[in-house]
Image (cartoon, helix red, strand yellow):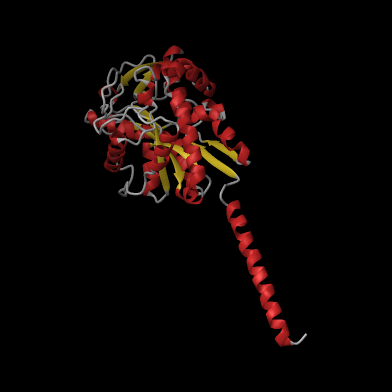
Length: 362
């Protein structure tokens, strides 16, 4: 075969090869449309570090295996990581590319954002919870002022530290008025029982039931003092798999509706008690607010205003050095789609910036 006669044949082979490649490319792209694994970091752990928690709709979803069931047909594995180091540990996982989704209290996610960690806030999961200062059973302190100059424990870098800062500011105090030390929940409970601290930022009920602790101060569900939590996705994961993000959000909002139904209150406490925190403690700490208020996922005016306030206060209390901009941080479209698909629009009351329901509750 001469070179002249070979050229058309070669060109035909080239066209066939190019066509084959074109046909193969969509298949390869489609293979990238879903991940092999979804990694969820939980900013906390059960008693003694056990990988079971309570107190949130995320922990309810974990114990019910909701996401595992949702993605089983796709062959996608759900990997949960429970962090006794709480929010700071979750930030570290995100920084190292080891977390796709997570829940965070307001302070650690603000700290992460201020240091360049890229997340999208998908929905809220808690608000209007009371805060408590607890001391040893024989404490003579009756107020925060009585604790000045004494050892006061709080888990630094977590939402508890920001909430404590708000409380102290209300009373004209700062952390510098105390010998402030950082302790996680398990360590703090032990320190109160052994009287190694004069007080700590922790609920009193289990400690009081054991006869080793007593309540010194509580806020009640004050909208000016409460913390709020968020569930987020990494920007990288959201960019690659928006459809997967929507399925995760929709599955979790369905859990949030179940969790917010008053008829499931007691069943949920029993489920959460698997974490090692007692049914009694959940019963007491959730008694002062309707579940639809406490477990609301809405990114409403109250949520946005409170997040802005948290950013300002975190800088004021010198917990962050840089400003944090909300622009592009919230991704409410996934929540809005889930609410519409599940016919849950209007299920949770919206709150104004002052923390009051926009529509009077029946």
